[in-house]
Image (tube, rainbow over all chains, first blue to last red; front, side):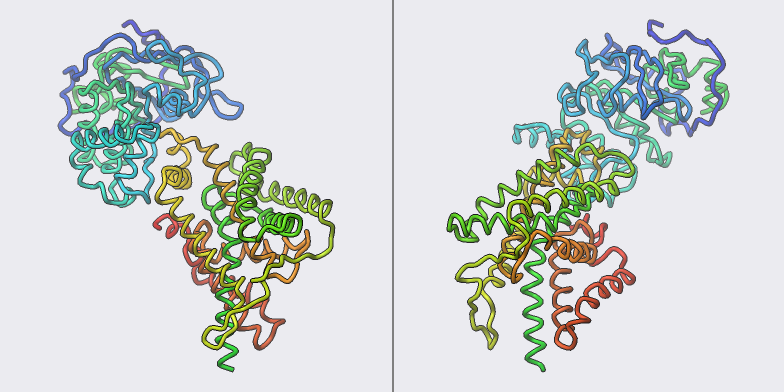
Length: 281
Length: 293
């Protein structure tokens, strides 16, 4: 492992509740590496300390997200996963440390500036503007594009990539199911042709049947060349989908490796994945 | 008697238009920013004084003067937001804005007393005291113009909100501030501009109020704000169309009761608010309905 994270087995793991969740319906079989070429680091998180009010939630988080890969961050509730996402997207400013994208610092920049650099976040809670139509929502994904003709071309491309979303274009976003809203959020995220998409628990609240299409959409976005950083409570599903895995605990990175390494790690398997991975088909 | 009732209804509708002019800014600011702007009443009076100054000192027509007072009030609104409101954050924000905007009201009132003194003044123009005879009723021109202006202003605000890129950013911020930031909307800029627009429309309301009220002084804003708050609560907080509907409903009701007992008219004004809220707690166009407009 070349990750800057702490080595494996450095201490007791938090055995707090973690939704091991159902396996991805139709997902990759355990042991088979998911698609997605792994390249040099696109995103480097180094020694990040961040939190709300007076407290630190992240206490020196360091890891890398390889170019073109899907990297999944797992960990129990309170580990700091969503705080990490907010810090990368600029919603929260870190107190210490740095975040860089292809060597360019993201730290200290506004969410709009970070969007301009090609990083888009799909937050944990559904973030569609529910009383606007799907078309209006997707158009807002290109809000920072001053060239409206370009925005129109991007929307056409997004609708071609997600034809089912095109079918909902005239519907109010709030009238869609949770899974449908997720797909619209993905489509909206693609309006800027981002270099990196941050997906914060895309499976949250979704039925297993819906998960299949949501994770298929994640794979599709990655196959089209977008690097993805995924936070997932459904640890097994997230790691199976990913080329890289990062385990967080109490605001620090507990370990990292390939998705398969993390999935097959005995301690992680026992504590976070509900027993041996191979038994959870 | 029937004639008196018809007159009361016409009077209520026209006066309701005047109140709608003053209430739309208040409800817009609440709808987008969750700020209950207690200073709105005093700002209406400031708008009236600006029209007065242009009319008396420079001889500029009241309606033409709006070309100056509306931008001036917009700038004042943006400055108030920048100086007093933009830093307020957290769970107590809405209640804090009550206190802060009350402080702003006191500051503005103090300035008004300093500049114009305590005496009542009234806006004057040829159309303020003249009327047109329609279907047996004498309708004051200023009320007709005020009503037309109210409808035009509400159409303009809807156009701004639903047909422009800025409007889309306002509606997005209104629905989910965090999601708006994540698509690149500068929510602080949207907040400042929205507050500016909400205060700018008080210039229009202030001019018509100053011409129809029979006189105003720096203290007149307090009676206004209590009525305006009742109107926007009844209309549904954040609903621009609701502000017009509630203004017409409340003022017509007050006007009708005034036929029998002027003393009870004001009681019925606020009593109607309580009754409607018991039946429909979100007002005529409550938040859910507002979002669906």
